[in-house]
Every structure is written in C-alpha cells, then in structure tokens.
Amino acid sequence: MEQSASVRTIQKVNQILETIGISTRGARVSDIASKTGLPKATVHRLLSTLLKIGYVRQDQETKVYYLGLKLLELGTLAASQINLRKISEPLLRDLANRTKETVHMVVYEQGEVVYIEKIESEQGLGGLKMASRVGARNPAHSCAVGKVLLSFMSEEELTEFVKTKGLPKRTDNTITDETEFLNHINKVRELGYAIDDEENEQGIRCVAAPILDGKGKAVAAISISGPSFRVTRELIDSKLKNEVIMTAREISKKIGFGTIEK
Image (tube, rainbow, N blue to C red; front, side, top):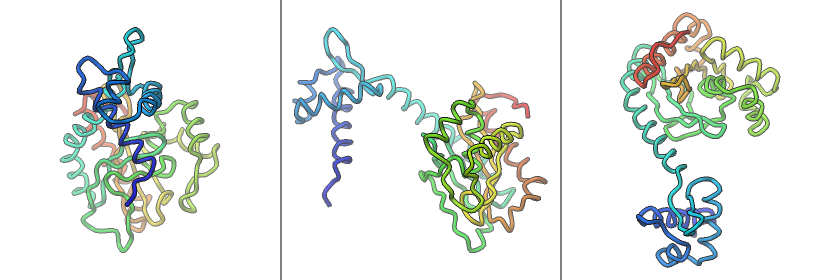
C-alpha cells in the first residue's frame, strides 16, 4: 500500500531528529541532508517548523542544529505516564475488584482524554459495548474523566477550549450549551468529582476523580464506569463517588501530592 504524504513527512522528520540526536556536536543542514539523503530544501523547510515548535534549537552563530528542550519535556511526560501506570495499577485493580465495575485512567491532551489504563468489570456490561481501550481518545467535554480534568483549567482556558473544540453532541444527554457547560464545570470544581450521565455513550454512566502531582496539578483522572441500569445515580452518591475519590487520593499521595483536602 502506498504511503500517504503525511506519513512520509513524519518519516522525514524522524530521520532529521535522529540524525541530530546522534550528532554529539549538532548538525548543519548540509550534514543532515548528506546523512538522510533528503534534499537540502526539504531539510531546511522541516527544520524551520521544528524550530518553531521547539523540537530543535539552533546556534545563531554557527547555524548548527541541536535537539530542542521540547523533546526533553515530552520524554519526561512519557516517563511519568509509564511510572504513573506502574504505581496506579494495583490500586486501580483493587478499585475494580471492590466495585465490580470497569476502571479507567486517562491523561489530557489537546482537548481530548487519552486512555492509559483500563481494567474490565467482572460483571460485564449487560450486552452493552464500551468503546474505551488503552490508547483510544474521547472528547473531554462529554466524559467524567475529561470534565474533572477541565475543572482544573482557568475560566479563560475553558472558554478557549469551548471555542476551539466545541461541544459536539455525543448522546441526547451531552451538554452542548456553552453557558450550561461552564456552570457544570464550576460545579465539578466545587465537588471534586464528575459524573458522565450517559453523555458520552448511551447506556454507560461514570464517576471520576483527579490525580494530583506534587504541585497540585491534575496530571490524570480515574473513573468507575458501568451500565446505567447498574451504576445508578443513587449508587454513585452512596458508594462509588467515595470509592473513586479515595483511590485517586491514594495514587496522588504516591506521586507526591500528600494529603488531599476535599
């Protein structure tokens, strides 16, 4: 199958970054072109973009390119996510065992949540199918884990989120009105947890709480999810919200937050 232009571009970018990375003294355009076999014009064009987004940096005097600090930042984030999964896994499994429902962990990325852990319910979904899987994405506005992470944004950031991503309808219960949505997020902020009341998937109800790092930043969120006939609002209020908050607190402590005050 013929590769798309976007895939070929990504491959070229990868070649350029790897070439710069293995060059201990950095690399000039001519060096990169020679080692990759790419035209100088192509190398220069891609480097200009990489420079703007911080993936490479350039010495203005020598014109030599080096890997940018943005890559270090991304590498640190990747490592922290791997550590977060390792630290969280036994606690999430215990949560799933106690509640007999499906447990998720997500991180926020560019207006969406990315699933980094999923532990299946022992009871099943009663004929329903949940779309979530590790590596999958969902819009942040319509799911409990997304809403609880959005609640840590400033009002300006939330307004920009709505402007950029919109509030597309996923089910009949999805909040699509901006004013209603912003008021809802304020309520989530007050409560410290969020509920997805069949807003992302019909027949699936969830409750979520945030994972906080040593600086009090929400770095992830976890949720308990199950069929709405079993995960009722009454069950969430009487048991599940406390279960997910307690586990989120335990994970937060393990990554350095300390005692979380409700």
